[in-house]
Image (cartoon, rainbow, N blue to C red; front, side):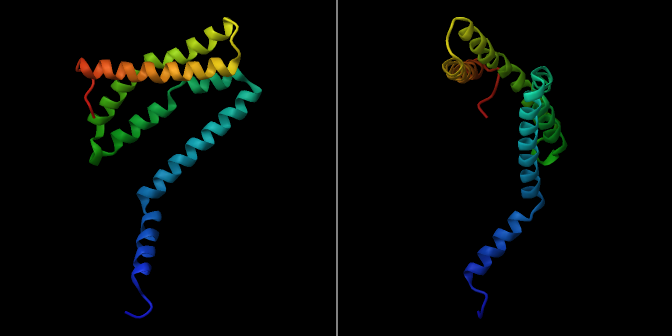
Length: 142
């Protein structure tokens, strides 16, 4: 067996994984997402309107739908369409975050308590809406 023992095979497997195209693509997507968020936070320091306009564009959804559609091994356009439809349905309870954040502050609640309540309301409304849509057959249990 010589110098090449079991731990060497583990390292080779690890090295093969982290240099694979799929892994590097995933890391690239994560880096691009992080760069986009950092860029948006810097833009918001100079122009909240421009940053809000960029955030309002569903870029993440658009890119996700496109990437799913291009991957025929994982469902292609059928899965992309299902994802887009479910995202559309779940967009509506997400608006509760903005309504809550703005509305609670107008009622005199400070930003951070209003933010926390709005995040929790958004989470629970999205969860509840998901349960409702699933129970009514609008979306599958996948």
